[in-house]
Every structure is written in structure tokens, then in C-alpha cells.
Image 1 (cartoon, rainbow, N blue to C red):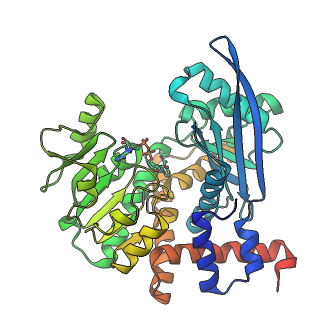
Image 2: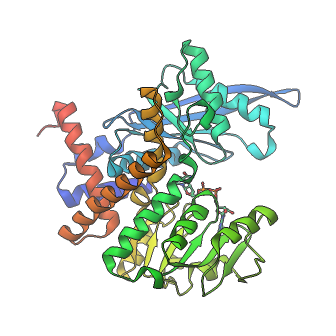
Length: 412
Ligand SMILES: NC(=O)c1ccc[n+]([C@@H]2O[C@H](COP(=O)([O-])OP(=O)(O)OC[C@H]3O[C@@H](n4cnc5c(N)ncnc54)[C@H](O)[C@@H]3O)[C@@H](O)[C@H]2O)c1
């Protein structure tokens, strides 16, 4: 169960920095895997749903990670996502551990009320294991601010204490932060800018393609266009569009809002998703789904670099191929860490009962992303390793150091 694709990256990082196998074994295995079942009445019939919470590591702080609503989700997949959270939080230096949660349900077939009730019951079924200093859920696939408000309410009712800091990604009215929605895309763009500066490309000559034009892809596209680069192609689940002179990103956002897709935008040509991914671009940003770039697609990629905005968009086999071909991959645990960084800022404000101004929040977010990028870059330059290996090693070293301090049995 613990032998996930991500754990192969942990083993590799361990071997590179000379960490004992017993330590790697402790770091890979989850601290707790919780499973519960809750029941709802749907269309007059009682129905039972499986809830999962994988608390992977609390070495660096309380567990932190999203809760997704999805019909097909396994404990293995949840663990892999939780491991990723542990390493992401370590890379970006937020004092949280890693977790992930899921409710096995099909939100497309459920009413809004049923989804909210399931959010309430999820927290109730895990009571005792969730809390602002224990485990702090957040939105993920098919969950959003409204689910978080209900989860916060559920926890507050159970404990008799109003506790906004128990979840992040809440609506602003109940303690959320206005920067959270755009934070991941903004962070992706910050990492993009730092990388372009490093490799010395003139930023206004760089061409970028973005696979997935949702919350993350749209914000990244807008910022990258503002930086002077050309976003020449974007896509969604219906198809892709291309304009070699650059797309007016706000107009594409408006078009998608109006029609439901980027396809048929009048200042671009329709192409397929595959054509976008394999187009002659400088930078490709996958911002849609996991495993979007497998080993077959990898061999057709012409981009010089890939910045992983989505979680796990490049499979481990594709990663190997890209490395061999000299394509730089900036890994998800660094590139999309803006979201959890903003969540951390939300949690600080909730625990301090104090609201910061938006400008301070943006500055904090930008500085933390730049610092994380530069820490990874230093390892990359010093050890001549790729960015994923470097980011994994940066995170692993922090985890091992903490493990040895907190658990003396590992101090050999
Ligand atoms: N939202 C966040 O803060 C956040 C944080 C970290 C990681 N992520 C990851 O980033 C990715 C995108 O998240 P989001 O919040 O923007 O999701 P979203 O649902 O808002 O957008 C996803 C986009 O991908 C498109 N898409 C789906 N299948 C596609 C396909 N086969 N080809 C091309 N496009 C396709 C959808 O049409 C949509 O435009 C996910 O992998 C998510 O796990 C998101």
C-alpha cells in the first residue's frame, strides 16, 4: 500500500543524500490512515458513503491537506497525495505536515444540500482527529469554500468553540482570505519568472502553452501575459486553441465563462489537446489532471521546460524520458505550492484573530515562493541534479533532521 509512485522519488532522494533505509521507511509510511462510513438519506433512501483521511506526517507541524469528493478514490491514491503534501509543505517551508482526505461519492449526482451534509458528517466522523493544531482540511477536487464553511461549522458545534482555523479555503466572510483562489496560479507564475530569469531567456520572447484553463491555469496565464510573455495556447477538456502572436488571456477567460469552453475563441485557431502539449513552445504548463504526460507523450514534447501546476501531471516514466531528452521539469511540490502557502497565511490570521491587508498577503506569498525556488535552485546547481531531485532532497533533509530531533531512536 505504501509503495506509491511518489515513494520511488523519496527512495531516490534518500539514496542521493545517504539516508538510512530505516529512516526512509519511517518517512514513507503514513502515521495514520482513517476510514469511516457515514449515511445520508438520498431520494428517500438511506445511502452509505466511505470517508478516508490519510495523515501521512506530522513531523513539521499539524497535518494539512485537501478533501476531495470523487466516486473512485483509493487509500493508495490518497496516501500518495498525502505524501506529496508532506514534501510540498517542507519545500515551501510552511510548518505543516501532510494529509489528504476523500469522500467516495459522485457530486454530479448529488444535490447541493446532500454535498453540504456530507461535508458536515465527514468532520463528525473524524472528530478527535481533526483540529487547528491536529489536522486542517482544505478544498480539493469537487469541494470549495462552501464545503469548508460547513466543515468549520461542524467542528465548532462538536467542540462548542468557534474555530475558523480548523479548515482553510473558507469564504472570506467566515475567516477565509481573498488571495486563496488565485494563489496557486500566482505562485506558478512567480516560479516561471524566476526560472526564466535564471536561464536568461528574454521574458517577452518566451512562448507558453497551458493545458487546463481552470482556476490555476487562468490565473497563471494572466500573470504570465502581464510579465510580457506570449501565452500562445490554452486548453480545457473540450479542446485547445492557439495563436502564435499570443492570446489575450482575459478575453479567453470571458469567452470560457460565456460558452463553457476556450474552443472557438475568435482570435485563435482550434487545435487538439495533444497538439497543444506537443507544440513548438518554450514552456509547457500542465494545469489540468494527474498523469497528463505519460512516456509516449513525453517523447513528442518540444518545449524546453515543463512547469507542473497540476499535481503529478508527469508520470515517473515520462519524467525519466524528459530528463534524458534534456527537458527541464519544475516539480509540482515547488511550482504549485502557492495554494498551501496562502492557506498557511489564512491559518495564521485565524489563530491570531487578525486580518492582514491584501498587499501584505501577496508580498508574503511571492517572497515565500521565490525563497523556495532559490533554495531548490541552489541544490540543483550544487549537485547538478534535476529540479525534482533537488526539491525532493531539500524536503527530505528537513524531514530527516526533524525526525532525528523528535525521535531519538533514529539518531544513528
Ligand atoms: N486549485 C488549487 O489551489 C490547486 C493547488 C494545487 C494543485 N492544484 C492542481 O492543479 C490542477 C488544476 O486545478 P484547478 O483548481 O485549476 O482545477 P479546475 O477544475 O478549476 O480546472 C481544471 C481545468 O482542466 C481542464 N481539463 C480537464 N481535463 C482536461 C484534459 N484532458 N485536457 C485539457 N484540459 C483538461 C478542465 O476543463 C479545467 O479547465 C489539478 O491537478 C489540481 O489538483 C490545484
